[in-house]
Length: 385
Ligand SMILES: [Fe+2]
Image (tube, rainbow, N blue to C red; front, side, top):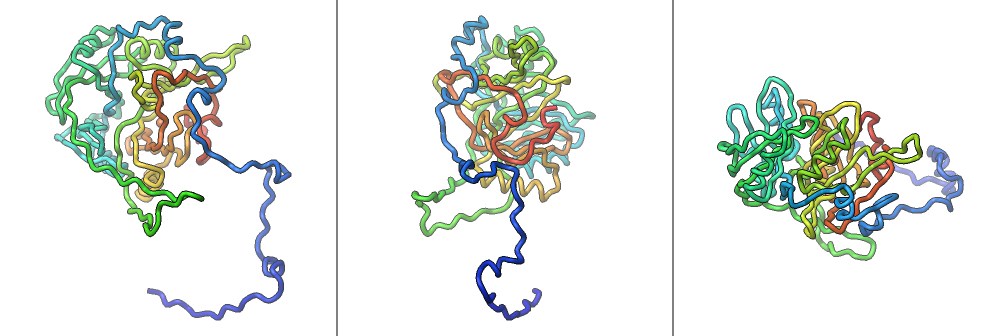
């Protein structure tokens, strides 16, 4: 250990202004000139009906208007896992472990990764010559729902998942732009892993944490479950129609741009799984209009804000490439953190997302980069490309 050099510190003589004379001046801000104009920041948990942007419509009203018959839909229970093909399994495995997943089962050319939730696995990786997006996988209510899905144009056949942990049956349906939609039934639930401890927070008045010190262990942000995924699309209206008509997926929010005739056009949407009164994640699938069609990212839930930061630091230390984060989204409210995996797919950690149900009205807000986050690093210009 280096020896600490002992120096004699002499308290400054004279008055405080003289003592501060050699300190750098505060750089003048470009903000409001009068400090009285600046309002301190606040946070609040606001009712969904009060935050839905410029326009809102009830879900049932919207479904009626677009003529959706919900009795004909394939009923999704939840989003369960993502499916990707990677050319290099050992490298993606190292990344996934650093991202907070662990291996449930593996064969020579396939790996099932799990989190600590009750899903057998949250990410399926198979080896292949090229990088390929194989779609998200939704668990459906019954085997009959798989049979219903088999009748959707572009559907494959129902197949038993013999090697996958928990078993079950799978069918793949292709959407209008060729994204595979996997639907699964009959997977045995896995025993839930141990939940991380809820950290006790002290605030100005409420200070429940007495003689307890918050301590953290550096490491990956353990993944709980898959939360959502999404695409950039070219046939936005057709895609919205496909998902909302065939499945119990419903829009939570639309984003629009102005059109030349003074009206507006919807260009992006966040959709949730309609489970009636039951609270569900603000979005499970999202789509944004783009000149090209490609998967944008998939996102996995982690415990809390500290876990996000620790996870970010861990991934940064391993020299992976950060995309954007840590920050706080506006629509969905999640604390987000986006990364590139080693194959070149975007993947996100999120925590503290909004929940909605059938009584949450659909909201409309203007599209724009500034609407993506309330705080966080600058949005990379190409984020929505
Ligand atoms: Fe996301």
